Image (cartoon, rainbow, N blue to C red; front, side, top):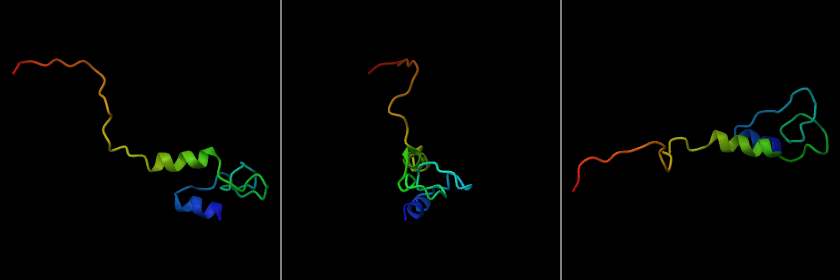
Amino acid sequence: MCQEIGHLFGLGHTSEDGSTQNTCMDYSNSPTSTAPNQHDYDQPAAIYAHTDVPPLSVAGRFRVRGGW
């Protein structure tokens, strides 16, 4: 079930050769592979990050000319 929910969020398999990656997103039958690992949490954050939002500050120097 964990793996199918991961697929809904866009995650792929971490391994397809049966080796354990300690995540539910691998093909291992290991008891340590029943839950997501940190990589599985980081991937949706990267996939669905709001890159269209401008930064809060802009680096550089600014000169204001003129006055009121």
